[in-house]
Amino acid sequence: MKRLIPIVMAAALAVSLAAAASAQPGPPRMQRPEWRGRMSMHAPGLGRPAWRGRMFVRAPGLERREWRQHLRIRRGVLSGRLTPREAGALRMRQHAIRGMEWRARRDGALTMRERFRMDRALDRQSLRIWRLKHNGRWI
Image 1: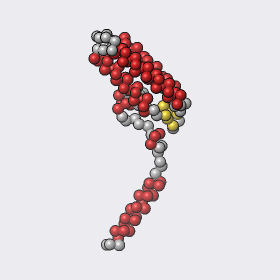
Image 2: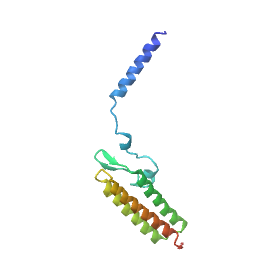
Image 3: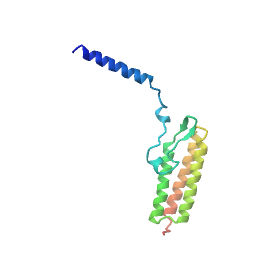
Image 4: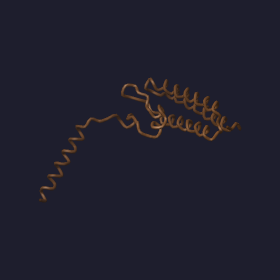
């Protein structure tokens, strides 16, 4: 019995190593699409990667900022601090920023210049949201 345990353990180890070696590896962790999660579930298009064949570009910082700005606009409308017209203008600008992001990502690479332009556009949009929420107009 004492001799049988090491033999069974060695056989189990050999089988598990063979199974692991024959399994086809998936894409690396940074290239794996994240279809689950708060951003992709609630905001269409924000959490989804821009595909180019099997590769895609992720910029979670940009996506997170866009999502937070979307929530700020929504909360402003619900609280009455943003008028429907102001909210519509902010949403149109958010849509333009998403288009800029899509165009930057469609070639499969997000350059530092494109990232800088997106950050600047998001900074300006954040300032617009703050100004319109604090301009003294209420519904």
